[in-house]
View 1 (cartoon, rainbow, N blue to C red):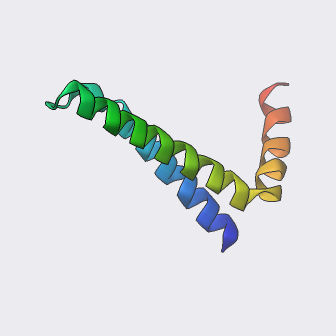
View 2 (cartoon, rainbow, N blue to C red):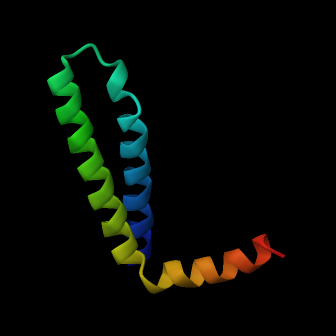
Length: 72
């Protein structure tokens, strides 16, 4: 349950970061773009580190198993 929640939160973080790329193209004022960008940045960081915190040991195991295969 904790692992599934962690991965879900990380996916949500990736969606937030993708939404951050759309902020410059919104038809709103510069001040509002700055506010939206800052809010999305903070939300993306908070959800990213929250997901990493939930995954903890599972993420370290996944990385250790994945990296040696990629760099051989």
